[in-house]
Figure (cartoon, rainbow, N blue to C red):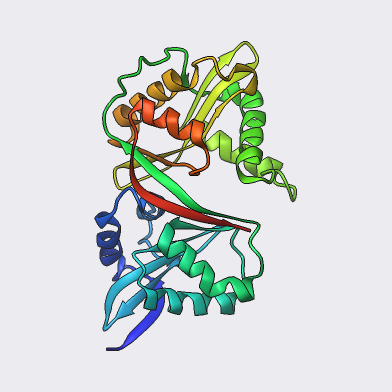
Length: 279
């Protein structure tokens, strides 16, 4: 049967949506990209999403950008996508997605792409659809632009600790602040503050397919081990499922034992496993 790799267009968009709808939590990030494009006044097209077609039927896809994200990929599709990635050269800062797919794709491109900065091979994907039994913290609220001057440094600190590199490198301070400002303006950012100190913060990084993916969960080190995190996350989950999407999701490194215990206590359960290759 004939097969080809080509960009997703209007004709293949329904088939891509059908792939994503099979695993809405797994593909939340890609769904958010498609839904954002679909809100354009122009007909959506997605040159940054490649499709693998077998006899004219879409079987797999690959999101290209700062993150390379496999979508329902078979071994054959990953080999075809790897050829494209190798020819283009590495431009991404990560490969992220279902563990088996992401790690196999990395194996296929790692020679030409060079050394990864870090490989996080096991990242439990967690989800919940109901309010937590943990009593929420009524001091956790949506962030406002008035919080921005203290919120951005907290986001920088959390990002640097989590990813291992500052989001401000390469003169990106303005663009990073703009990104945080957009999350705040779109009611995708949560904060607990005492005077001019951020005690807790979290964001919803993407929303798609009825799923909101929470990220950037952080408790100020000066306030840790005081029972703040669980009530704060309880509030975030409540706001997410009532205001944003019916399913709240996140993923976490398997070595982060305290975070896994926290999320379990709030009511999250594991539904998938991701892997991330960082460059």
